[in-house]
Length: 151
Image (cartoon, rainbow, N blue to C red):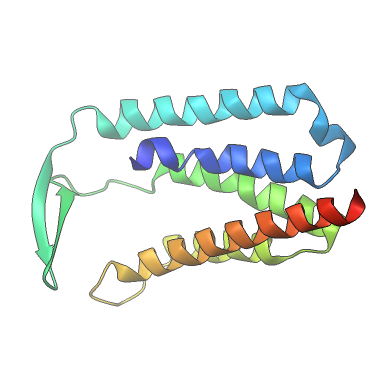
C-alpha cells in the first residue's frame, strides 16, 4: 500500500499548483511529468523494496503489525524522492498564495521521518503522517474556498 499511495503526493502537489492559478502549472506538460515521475517512483519502490519482501508479525504495545524481516540498509529512496515534490510545490504555493501550512507540514514530515526520536513506539511517525494528512485536507479546502470567492 505504501508503495502505491505515497507517490500520489506528487499528483496532489501538481494539483495544488494548478488550483492556485499559476499559469505555467495549468500546462499539460506538468501533469504528464507528474504522472511519469509518480509512476517511476512506484516502479522503483516495487522493484527495490516490495519484490522479495519477507514479512514477520510484530506485536508491540498490544498492537499487531507486520515488519520486514531484513533491517533497512539505508534511507527510503522513494520517500526521499517523493518528499522533494511537495516541498518545492508548497514553497511555490506559499509564495503565490501566502499559505505556509502545506510547506510547514511537508518540512515537519520530512524532519520527523529523518530524525530518530527516542520513543519506543512507531506511533510518532504516525502522528507526523496524521499531521500531514490534516494539512493536505486543510490546504485543499483553502484552495477551493479561494476559487469560490474568485468566481
